[in-house]
Image 1 (tube, helix red, strand yellow):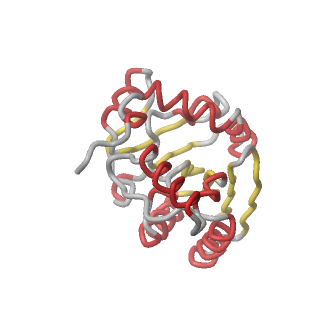
Image 2: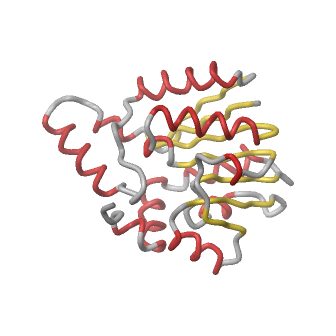
Length: 201
């Protein structure tokens, strides 16, 4: 297996890149999650989401990136190495957060991930996905160039990005996930070129 891109080997570099891409958008999580919740994050990286939660919330997560997990643990976070597609690695929680992971997975694995998460989330699943990647979803030369560039920069060393989602692709995906998992409600909002999806159990 080829090496991941450099941002997935250096947590501080990844953190810088994420801050530049989000422009503070993740601050919305505090209101979405609320107070005193048990939060679990598959594909947690080094646990960057924790700082956006209310201090009264508990947070834990799993990831296969050992460098990121070790970095998060050194900062006192409850993180473990674990495959997000194996349900034995999950904890029953009030809220499960899936941040910046769906576009890394095949459609089959996206469905599997959300299906597993829906069985362990008591209240809701919060999905965060970048919608600016829409520019890499076209068929023209520029889009194809951006698709290759984005795939190179965003290669996590585990998953090969098969396609970049257009806004229309995301809309169809979220509707399919809602139907397949019988979510009682799905709230979708957009902020700073990212999509925030609250899937109510």
